[in-house]
Each structure stands twice: as structure tokens, then as C-alpha cells.
Length: 276
Image 1 (tube, one colour):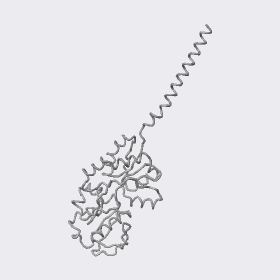
Image 2 (image 1 turned 90 degrees about the horizontal axis):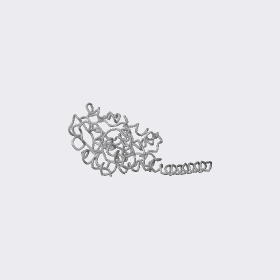
Image 3 (image 1 turned 120 degrees about the vertical axis):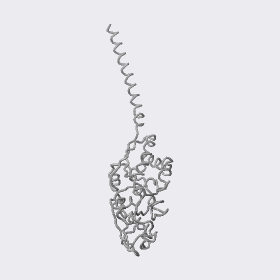
Image 4 (image 1 turned 45 degrees about the vertical axis):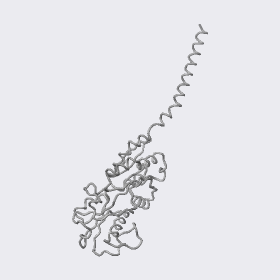
């Protein structure tokens, strides 16, 4: 009887050891299952068509193992601050000169990852049909950040409305105006306020993102446009420390993929050109 009990106990021990080995095997297999869970990232943006493009990319990234949360913010400073403070992993709303201006003022290390589209910049008016119709002392409105001030003044200069100091380029400010034959007045406002000034101003310089909600397109409605040699491509931006991460590179590939190109060509051909 004692021997039988002894053998029974030994058998139980062996069974438990075997079960333990099985559990260890399952534990070894667990990391593989865990690694298949999607990597989560946050991307900040502002308005269409940027947000529309991210909506297209989101399910495609899911196929690549990346779960992207789109964070829509309320002004054109927050997306860069959130990215610099590591509250988001990337943003999609700006051109490179604006990003460089932010870096210079904040000491941040934001970097361009993927150019996506060129938004056709233009000057719009509810009062006049041609630039020649603008009266003496007309008020011209532009965004108040340095990159868009320079962009607007360059556009005005190319249209023959003013002359600027030689070589100032997109760094131009009102102080660089050397000739202003019709004594135009220049008003600088917050980027998100541009559309609201159209009723009162004689001409407003803005991108399609702000003109389109008003039913305006550069090809049909702008009195002047920037031209095809723009330095202001709307670009996916990340940080120096994460630009080469697998998730950001997958995002860069998808945001410059055929689905986005087709969307831009089908829905926004009048206001933007794919930059890839």
C-alpha cells in the first residue's frame, strides 16, 4: 500500500512537471502573439484636405500594424508644440518654411518626412474681378506668421503689384517693399482668421484650405496665384528622434501612396497638386 501511494505521488509530480513545461512552451509562444498587436501613434492636424487624407490613410495603416489616432487641433501653433513636447508622434498641416520658422523660434528639432501636395496659393476678392481694378490704397490681407508674410509679398511682387529688395525671397517683410505705386495697405491677421476678412478686405491671400470652404478655387476665382515654383509643399512632419521609426516610415509610405494621389486628383484637382 505504501509503495502504491509512493508511486502515485511520483506520478503526480511527473504530471505537474510536464504541465509546467507545457506552460513554459505557451509562455515562449506568447511574445509572438503580443508582437502582432498594432503600434499606436498620434498625428495632429487641423482642417481638410489634410484631415481627409489622414482618414484615407488610417485603415491602410491598420493593415501595416499601425493604429493611428488623428488629433484635430484648433490653431496653427498647437500641432508643432504638441509634436515638440512628444504629445503626438507627427503632424500634417504645414509647409517646410513654417516648420523651420518654428524650429528657429523654439529651438525644437522637427523634421520634414514626406512632401504630400502643393496647395495653389492665391489672392481672392469679393469686390473686384482683376488685379488692375484694385483702387489706390486698397487693403491686402495676409497671414501674420513670417513664412506666409514672405510668401504673400512674393506673390504680390510677381504680379507687379509691388517691388521688393533684391534677393529677400520668402524672408520678405513689409520693410522690404521698395515700390508701392498704388499705396496698398497691408494687414496681417491670424491664419485661421483669413477667410473671415474676405467681406471687408479688397484682397486676401490664402491657401485653398481656407478658400475652399467659401466655395472659391484658385483656378476659377483667384485674381492672382503663386505659380508652380512654390517652396510651400504641405508635408508630413515628425521629430529628429522618431523620423526613422517603423511606424512613421509606414505612415510616410501610405500618405504618398496611390490612394492619396487618386483622392487629390479626383477631389482637389482645382486646388492642389500631388508632390510625390
